[in-house]
Length: 342
Image (tube, rainbow, N blue to C red; front, side, top):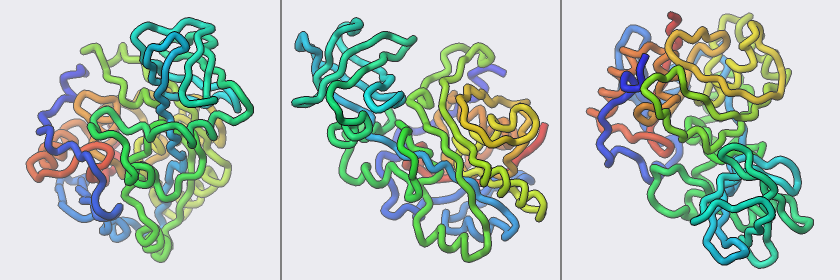
């Protein structure tokens, strides 16, 4: 398939710039396997699930990964931390008028400096001075790394709303946005129905917004992301299968973690890196249903949902959502999909 197969017209005013007044106040498009499209509210989700099902969430926590400052020569610089390597080192995208060379020092705040150690492809390894851990520095001096299609500067509401209520493990530079719709009352309603839940961790990187540049999608190289599947989640999935339930992934990041860990055949508890690129024809081994937001035209995530539910059905669903003026992308509305095997 070609990149142009995954394009669609999207009016700019449908790109949500702010979250809904309440997390669960968003809309939900139910895409039935029969092809029927139903306009629902996200609070209808528990009624669409069975007590035998298992919901799997990505519990990564978004860090305040964007730092602004100056080079020691005076030029402005912006660093977007992609990954924290240890207490003092991080990999970051660095924007400056001139590419900083190894040994150059970056000043982000009084007493907050970092040395450029080396370049690793598109990223720079930074080593921060002092005793404060990198995560503490980011928490004190960083900004919420909003996606490029959100045009306003980070505001107070973004610090809480661009974060799931169950976020636990810091390390993501982009939110697992399907999870943003869940609030405590909705989670309580799901639990009251007897629906079990489990967690994985996948630290979403800035590469999730990386465009596919060539018309031949087979030449695209995915960005690398770290994930962890605990043994308890593997056991919970086995138990759901045994009772005849479905595995429902909350978000494409949850799906990628689970399918990466099952790439060898059986799902295994592990912590590893993944570059899994899911396109139509992919064989899904774990996930039966997917809760997901609406994705950018020509994006790898649009290819993923097309692989999951069928390209023609996804095209119809997106055309329906545009006509129905659904809200798109990170702060937008959601859809519930079923797996359609090739």
